Image (cartoon, rainbow, N blue to C red; front, side):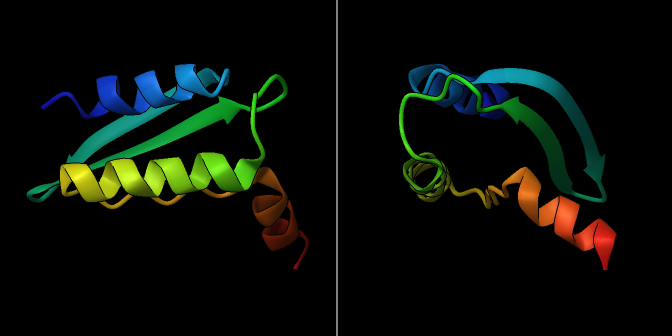
Length: 77
């Protein structure tokens, strides 16, 4: 409970904008994909990713932050 609220609050702290959210429950697992605009982010991406990892650890979650460049590279291969 409150997973989206916690992640959204962290995004707000880093001045990022949530563009889209997709969520589902797969078997017993909650899965969410969040597209976030980093254009006005107040810190380096690495710091944001580390903060997400810390949130995941505190909340018993798995959160993977990936920069758009990773997806662009995957589509070129």
